[in-house]
Length: 440
Image 1 (cartoon, rainbow, N blue to C red):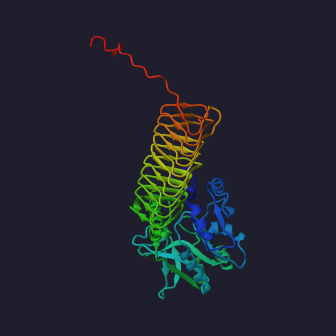
Image 2 (cartoon, rainbow, N blue to C red; image 1 turned 90 degrees about the vertical axis):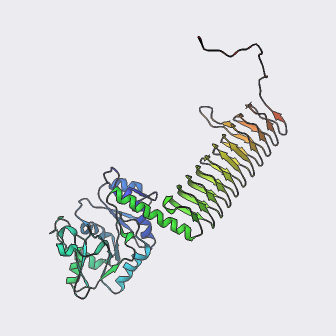
Image 3 (cartoon, rainbow, N blue to C red; image 1 turned 180 degrees about the horizontal axis):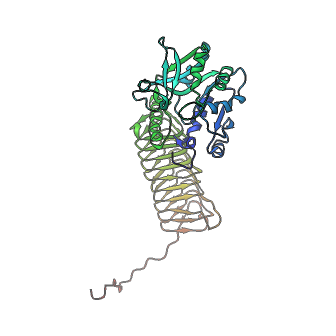
């Protein structure tokens, strides 16, 4: 990967590669999940400290067989052992279940796949009856063996007692000088054990990551799958190739997602929500019927039903917008509650505010919530009208039904139902002349 970050921590869909594998393993309800780590182990454990796993360190990197050997002491004597890989993040639950089910009438099962170009993979060698006999790695394969298209994915399942015996007999007599887990196939076949090769019907899910090019390819595969899940649930995705999901999305029917939308964290979209092009939604709940115009950023916020946001609006953490709220172009709202039907349509900033129902906030209005050391609250009552280019110097309260004249700086409470303004007298100088350039 040419990176200071351990490979399994590189992100796919906003989560580390290893996190995807652990989550898939959890769907199988295992007795335990054991993660064997080597390089960058401290970073890996710290990044996934909440993961429900047992950590085992492989102090020497002596191959896949050696890695599994380090983990076996943590397995029960009668356990079935399933071997997964932290850099193969797209494997599905159904495929793993089939691999485990094969152990019902076999001693060992190995996951294989058919590839047009098998370069780099270990080849599956079968006997004349079609039974798996052994796996030969690319570097150890003959020219004839390299022509075989059925390859090993690395995924394997076996009973612990058998696996421990086979691994105890694996040697390092190969081009890599490593203990190959795949050598267990030949040992099992030599013992007369029953070996099953389960051929994948979707090879893409077994693609691994060895560099950033492969990571980018898997990212698009992952995003395509996420888009397909949404579309089958009734979401219109304008272009599945230009949607990025980096978390968990819950969407109602008839949601529309335009191009280059990014959904991060936990995102909930009610029925009929429309998200315009180039929007970013992060940890947001959006009520039914709300329209988010293009180029908006919403983060850690709750949006009510039938709201209108944007274009070019920024909704920052701690914001709650009630039903029917309008937030227009180049408006920023932070840690504020805006009541039902209120409008903040143009070039305004609301921070640390409580805004009532039916309020109109004019263009260029700002809440001056920060005094250089502390944040202060602005309260605007129901039905108030805030004229354009107003500065509300917190802490301050604007009463219900109050009107603030345009261009005012309000640094004291404005009474309910009255007009409050601060404005210098208009002055016109008839004898004034515009300056001209010298020599002009």
